[in-house]
Structure formats: structure tokens, C-alpha cells
Length: 303
Image (cartoon, rainbow, N blue to C red; front, side, top):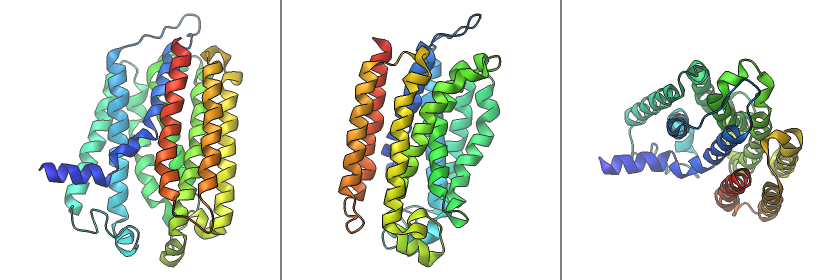
């Protein structure tokens, strides 16, 4: 039993939850500390934090497990992925399907913690279907990387809606800070996913799967990834300027400057002729970016 659980957590790369979760938590801190419009009120409730954690873990686990299930055949044919848990026989398709259903149920249950704000529950099924739909994207569009970006963009946007949903019903523009932060996440994720997909460019062409590296070549893909990350920096810098009511100041600005250095380094170590350091760029650097920005942003907002 413990071995199966360990294999499931390894399969979904549970540690990669650190990509989106810090941005959901940063949006939550922003939502709690940003003054509410006259006549409205925001309260911090411990179960709201629990709801964000439950929804994030449940949604990402369901999406990742479903992706492994849907891509089982391609993973078995790809030399880079043939030793993943399903093609290697470490897990059965039925156990992964059950895990997907349970994780989906966990996500849906987590939205109940935000009641009487009914918006998280109302949006839960469309959001879940969008997350699961990503697994089919490479079959019909080279823009699958941006689908993934939108999926992770939903983390800060949905966290904001979950905490300030009643305000949004009368002040729709209230969500602007989360949308700008979410846009930065979208461009950031799409950029590093394009870099990661460079490893499979040849396989994708042979398997008739669509991706930007397969369509544009490695050099073109890396250039597009750089443009995405430039957009990320622009949006992160724009956030305190477009939404001064949020209260982000110099500590956050220093964090954005550090993110720019890390992104430059990420692109410096991945070259069209040398993709051996893609995993370093994909995981190590991007976890530092997400966790670091959450930490500095939270310190800025709470001091």
C-alpha cells in the first residue's frame, strides 16, 4: 500500500505543486490585505487557507494523473519517458484512474470551504474540465504550452475569486491584480514548458504530436520562450503600478529584479546545441522563482 502511494506521488511529481501553489498563496495574501471597496468586507478565515491548499493539491494531482493516463502509449514509445510508472508497469491504469477520480473529488470538496461564496463551487466543474483537457491539447494544437500556462494562471485568479467573490459580484474590476499576476504566471509557465518540450521535438514530429519546438525548431522555440519570459517580467513590474491599492513596494520590486536575473540564467544554460541542463532550468530555477516571489511579496504586504 505504501509503495503504491509512493509510486503515485512520484508519478504526478507532487513536488512540482511548488510551481503554482506559491502564486495562489501570494494572490491570497494580496486578497486579504488589499482594502475592500466601501460597503464591502474581507475577513481572514483559517478554513479559507485550507480550502486553497486542498483545491490546489486536488486539482493538480487529478490533472497530472489524467495526463499520465492519456499519454500512456506515447510515454511507452518515447525513450525519455518509457520508464515512467505506467509504461514501466509500476502502476496499473485502473489505479491511476481511481487516483484521478479521488483527486477530482478532493478538489470539488475543497470549494465547499469557501461557502457562502458560491463562485468556487459554480466554477469547479468548468475549471476541472479545462485542466483535464490539457492532456489532449498536443494532439491538435502547437499552443498546448499556453493551455498549460492558462491552467496555472487559474491558481492565483481562482484564489482571489474564492476570497473576494462577493466583492466581484458588484465590483468586477476588483479582480484586476489577480489577472495581472495570473498573466505573468501564464507567460512564465508557457515559456519554461516550451524549453522543456525541446527535449521531445524529434519524437513529437514522428508521433504527429504538436508542440512549438516541433513546429519552429529548437532555436525558434527558445527565442519564443525568451519572449514569454520578457512578458512575465513586464507584467510582474506592472502589477504595483496598475494596482497601487495592493500595496506592493520596494521589497517586491527587488524580488522581480531577482526573478529577471534567474530567467536570464535559465536561458543562458539551455542552448540549441546543448539541452543537457533543461531539467535544472525546468525545476530548480523555477521553484526558486515561484517560492522566492511568494516570500518577498508576502513580506512586503505584511510589513
